Image (cartoon, rainbow, N blue to C red; front, side):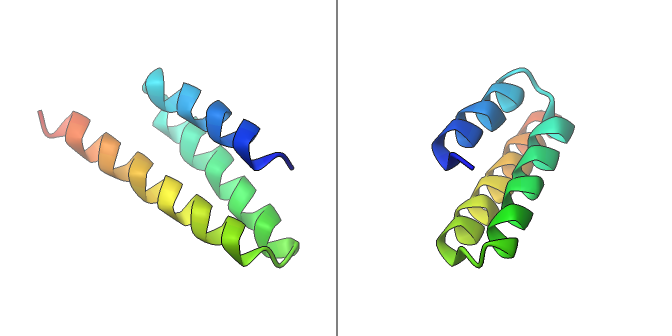
Length: 62
């Protein structure tokens, strides 16, 4: 998996407001990192998922 490409792909869904797809893709990436025992990747995708949730929370709280 190319982590940087996946991050760009995830951000594209966030930019469109498709948070469901963004979270699903990020979670799939996190799971792949878990299978590969890539702790740095796991932590990166946890941060990304938190960011998606925070963005969604800000949008619906307006």
